[in-house]
Amino acid sequence: MRKIQAQGIHHITLVGADRQTSIDFWEGLLGMPFVFEQPNLDDPNQSHLYFDPGDGRLITIFTSEDRKPDRSKAPQDIGCVHHLALNVSQATFRQIVERLDERRIAHSGPKDRGFMDSIYFRDPLGFLIELASYRFEPPAGVQMGEVMLEAHKIRVARGDYNIQEIHLADAIENLTRSTRASLSESREPADPYS
Image (tube, rainbow, N blue to C red; front, side):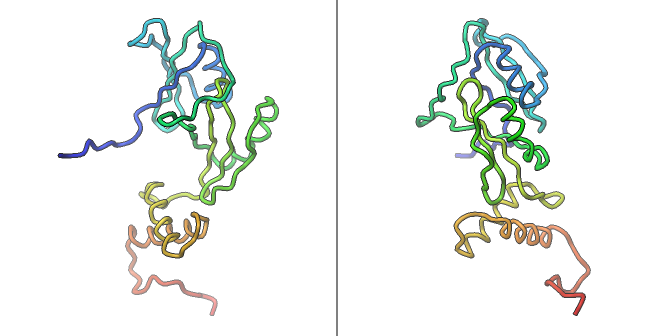
């Protein structure tokens, strides 16, 4: 028996209401260009809208003009999607409260997640959206997941409750040491002012 090795998310498809609600939310609020549209090839009564979230992947929405937005909370039962997290820069993150407030969109306010900042709100269909911003930049050639794995190991070894910025900083130092060569005999911390 062998694995079927995934190599990333190809796209995410959500069930939307009418076409314009989807365009207004995904492009008009979240800034994702509306890049492609065709019929839903499994149901010609629906349209299939494609939006570019900016990372080379796609978010697609099935729409139908006979469906109207229902702002009641989307189900979060077993097997349902809890929320969709979208990446934003720290510069954008610091503007989110103001931009949601000017539209009178209820939100959680900023949440400190230790390794990232988050804010939550619901789309016009009641689906929970998280806007998240990492507090670190991985070293060149290192993926986010590698930093998170190393920070996790450090956190567990120290007996800490959750990943904090100190774990990230130490993880980045460890990964830099292991992925980049040096001519120095010792790569230990030093004080050049002593």
